[in-house]
Image (cartoon, rainbow, N blue to C red; front, side, top):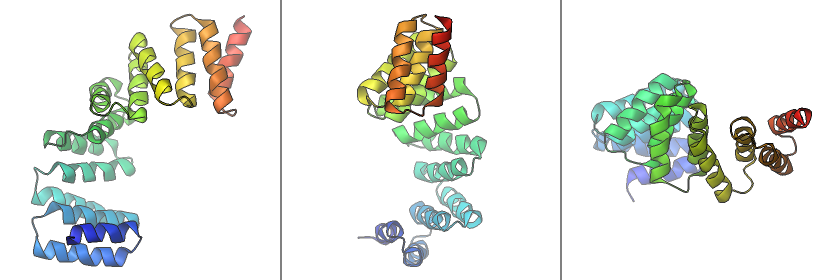
Length: 218
């Protein structure tokens, strides 16, 4: 087992000092290995030392600008700090540098969602779903983006798939209810969706509100 892997195990066990020691040794032995800098950054982030953590993520990018994982790690850090514009830039670089994975596209899409740039988010959320059709959260967020860009039929289809994958997804039922009520003009279906959302999550305020609006309209 190499020092990076051993260090990751220490990190997962909360043994931060032991992890830092191994990552330090790895950096000294392989100064151009971005993984050791990424992992060192992870430990510092876990310890709450964000100022130093970002420096190690940036160093990982510096030693190997073509390492998609380094850009992804930096993007994840920026996202956690709600620096969504910087996060989007890093995730985009991760995908351009060979990180053709669902998580990278999902996080890139979610960065644009947070920036309220839904049109920009759409293709990346769609790609995330294409790469991992079992990712319920990615599909749900893709459906919301479709609805926000007035692609109601496709949004409805995606939400129905979410419910097939997770029959207890209250938010999917709520949003499906909104689509049936507001865009498909099917009050009966909307009512059923709001009811199901409340059955799953009795304190779902939005579903409760949607149901009351339908009742008033009758």
